[in-house]
Amino acid sequence: MEKDENLKRTYDKLLKNGILSGKKAKTRIILTIYFSNDDRYKQYLRYIGITDKEYKSIISEIKTKIE
Image (cartoon, rainbow, N blue to C red; front, side, top):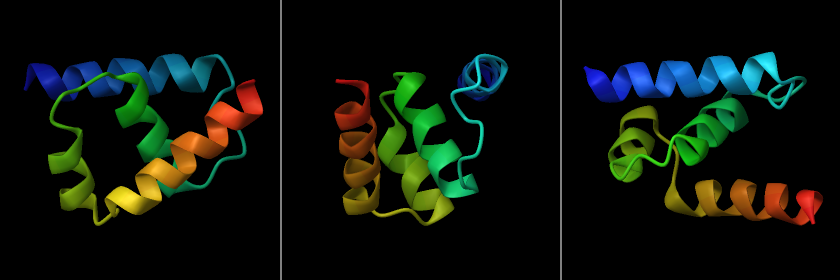
């Protein structure tokens, strides 16, 4: 339950700061999981139906845009 609250707080912060603005739902989920630093991220991805390849692709794309 505490982990879910951490994800919600992370999502709310990202949304408030405009980081998730204009992003697709799948990208929003991936970014929330990534920025929450949750060690169970693979379980979340499996539950939602996102492959590890999709996850890494979106994260690398975001990191490239930041640099």
